[in-house]
Amino acid sequence: MDRVRTFPYLRQDFAASLVVFLVALPLCVGVAVASGVPAELGLVTGIVGGIVTGLMRGSSLQVSGPAAGLTVLVFEAVQSFGLPALGAIVLTTGLLQVGMGALRLGRWFRAISISVVEGMLAGIGLVLIAGQLYAAAGVDAPVSGTGKVTGIPGLLVDAVSSPAALTSLALGACTIALVVGWNRMPKRVRAVPGALAAVVLATLATLAFDLPVETVRVQGLLDAVQVPALSEFGGLATLSLLGTVAAFTLIASAESLFSAAAVDRLHDGPRTQYDKELMAQGTGNTVCGILGALPMTAVIVRSSANVQAGARTRASRVLHGVWLLLFAALLPSALALIPLPALAGILIHAGWKLIPLRSLVPLWREHRGEALILVVTAVAIVTINMFEGVLIGLALSVAKAAWDASHIKLEVVDSSPDGVRARLSGNATFLRLPKILDSLEALPDDRPVSLDLSGLHHLDHACRTALENWAERHSSSGTEPVRLTRDDVVTTAP
Image 1 (cartoon, rainbow, N blue to C red):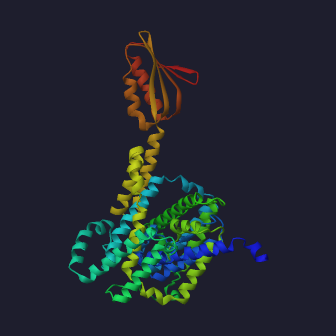
Image 2 (tube, rainbow, N blue to C red):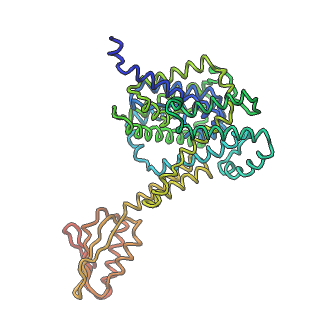
Image 3 (cartoon, rainbow, N blue to C red):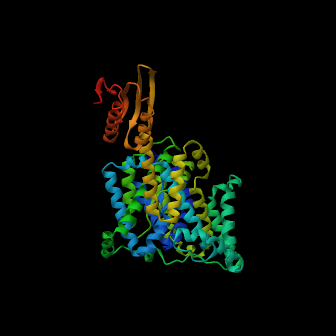
């Protein structure tokens, strides 16, 4: 009876934890393999996300672990700096997140333009899809995002003439088809997550027909863990490594907090405390960094599965971490049976879901500037790299906000032979100087002008100087001096 009072929702949380575990297992392994690190490190991050982050306050039902959204960035970091440096990068990222949470900066991540975030995810999705097509065919992918995309036609041509590559691609395609069509299965069948079912069936098919495809390489959980040496932190003095840390911090934090906002809309429980959630994510990443594992974020797929499975408290996500730990400890050899094309298929499907195709057309119709930011961010990530692509998106977002905020309107209130009365309203900034001057110079220069500035919310120095210069030029044409009125104060041009 006391146990029921202490854990009133234990039954619901226990059942939900099993569902989340089954959803998380193939994704943890798949993200690790796609990131170019041992599969066990994906499980380590999932375990830490469940047990460590899961115990902390912030978002009660949000589930953390390795995310497809960071796959491309992790792969680039491992290729550039080596696997031993990954722990130092993730550890520094975690400490920065903890610091930002302590400084109450978590809520400010909600101010990032949604177009930049969706563009970032779309770019990641495109690179992920392109890269995993090569993995599905059993060949090495080009390093650059552009090379991955442009090399796809050649990949398909080569695969047609290679029975092994064709078999591998077919297995990956069947995996994608099974995941996509799983929602059409009977309700009882759908109790097993589609991704897990697809991986299990692909594994059974590989064993039954002895398919010539690569499988996951296993080296053991403890062997995969690499505590970063102190020498790895010396690289943080380089600009390239600092840029990678900044990209990890920005993307992991933004994705986690946007996911928290989405999860809050799925349930009626306690709302997310953003600063505490950022500290929880930072603590988890700090532990992952110490263990040399993958970075973590809150993952909307696992979080929504947790809510839909009936979870009520943090216990469900903690238990899912316990199940991952038991699997990694008791059944490590099972990983070696999983075919890589099946994991590639899972990640291709995950990458496709990162691309906001459904919202792009309505966004273009209603807010073309935001749609342009989304597309440019995605293209920049594919053609340049992750960090610079996000910076380009943020710069465009700030420029658009500044342009929109500087809206200004000139209205002629009264025009008669005796004079012209006009009114400026809005925000007069240097960004709108050409429009302001064009409108003013279009006023009649043979009649007195009274210009009311009381409707301006902001008048910067450049515009004030331009107005005074215009008024002086207009007055020199032989008419009466221009009268400038603002807040009951009248000034007359010389």
